Length: 198
Image 1 (cartoon, helix red, strand yellow):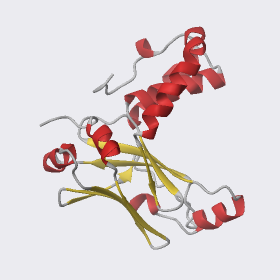
Image 2 (cartoon, one colour):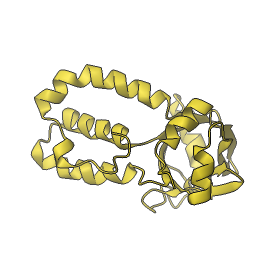
Image 3 (cartoon, one colour):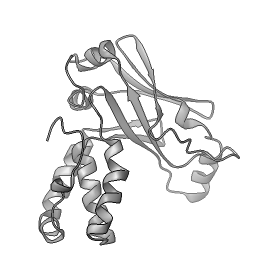
Image 4 (cartoon, helix red, strand yellow):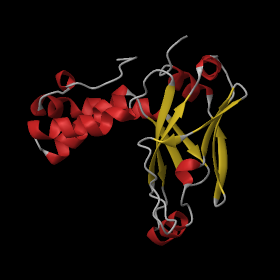
């Protein structure tokens, strides 16, 4: 499934077939996601998406909501845009705090955080942009706990990222949340598979 860029109707398992394999698929996806996850600071986690993670998400939505055939087109429309298209990385960024009051206080001061995420590799700084170009902050400055960010790499940055043991750093540069993290080599190597070779 490496290199797949879109989920089609033909990729969708029947309800019973998915239910029969769900436990096995969840185990596989859990292992995959471990290699596609990066904590940045104490509360933000980047979950880098690909065809397989989105295929799983579509199936989970269908399994839980039981909307049948009518639901499939909506789920494909919602999740296909989160599959990288060759020279980009796409992440679901989650701000997670168990205490609801502390979480609310943090999010109240994170307005515009979707414009403050950056990937640095090979001397290039790639600024993330909201996946759907919609700011997930309210007018009063509160951010959503879930953000979708896309990093579009040029040819040189993609080549640098694909280089074994390349230094790649994800940062959030918000006045109220300034943190960065180096991608461990197993994570960088896994994400490099999302990028087309020149």
